[in-house]
Length: 632
Ligand code: WTA
Image (cartoon, rainbow, N blue to C red):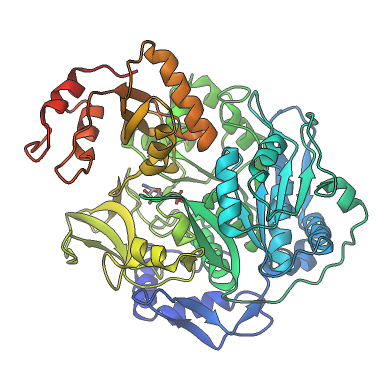
């Protein structure tokens, strides 16, 4: 099962071939899976028309490739170790056979509730094996899952359920992360007040907290599973049938439901995991993300199972019960391949080094990062303290929209450079564009990152809104996929992502739209208008800075900040709470009424000597007021 690329020269050759003849490359990858019917066409459609298709005519079920396919040879192999929030909770491991059985049973449960192919099912759950079982059971019956990160508010959950018209919600009574209890059922009940389309709620018991119960709508997971049959024949899906919808923030409006499809996504996540991490059959692979984000979809659930790996489902946080938790878990399961976020690394490197040194990390072979740029200091700490200088670091750049990793070293093959995602994976052809739509040639250059050719894992649409799909990704540079990221290509042709070029923030690796946070803050009865910008934050990467004008004097700014925090947590999620707020007399606006965020970003970063041209502002004096003002 080793990757088919084993040296840097081979990488260069395969990459070149894969660009010249992408169909041959991806067809060969797709052939490694079980299909009910082979495709008629490897690829069709274009970025211009927004109608990309892969493996059309092919029929498959992704869960047969995740589960059934492995049963004969290694049904007894552990698919997931479960590491609960409480480190003393007893062990729970699910083998491939056991996971298969649970998924089949839950697939039968879903069908008994009338859910079928194409129906949408929302999943709002704790990080226990049941989130993977629910997800895979949907895929098995052809229902389209939409996982909502369990840190989102009732309103965010409701927005997502309404947008995709989900008819069922699967949740827990509650979850515990660290010392916090999140009452998932209570939040779900609140969300469902505005979701009449949801007829069924399945509640998986986790915490035992008190919950309300709506007869006729709510049912316990364990009651339904008690009598479910473990035989289930997977629904045969078209390659291009939707597999899931996952919402992600953009620069404007509400989050967009990215649609991923069965055949292309399967082929893409599986082969990228193998190439980047160079995983083998005996490896223990741990991705610390949450299943509510794309990283969890692709590299906790689907990718590792497609490769027949042993993975870990981790319910807790890096800080619980102490900042050595991640390293303790690595030691406990003898993790070989470890994948986390720069934010976690930055937070943990501030802690006492004995938390690391007390653990035996000698099993580690490859270290990965994802979600945001990694600064050089964090990269070196990861390399030296965690990897002991022996483990290649794979800094993987990709997006919810891309389905899987796009630009990344291949472990032990691509020479790495701190802070660089390095080179495109096979089948991926990046380019840099200037603002006028010209491709920037050569090396030692910087521009907007685009992708030149379709790849199987790419988003096939924004749920219910083709125009938004086209406008966001394809209309800015016709013939290219626009990523929204800025990027530098250095003298060696290596890529370094510099961050978003649109109004999207990346806070601790979470994508947040400035407009979403502004709209939430605008709901406060004292706020006239808010403007959100990001600023450099030494742990989160980017912090949220909220400037706002108010309609009356704010006597107690600290208390007011708390009200703003609560409001943002309630409307979006605690992850979107501003780190700083500043009440201002006016926001810097152009004559056309546009807020000049460029200036606010400079002020938030403390770079007030270098504000650039302010002459186009209606009232340049507001800038001095803001500089002199105080943030809380
Ligand atoms: C950022 C997460 C720098 C980038 C998989 C992208 C990164 C956004 C990296 C997507 C990286 C992701 N280096 N920046 N290695 N990986 N990003 O959709 O701005 O949650 O556009 O997907 O995260 O975030 P998303």
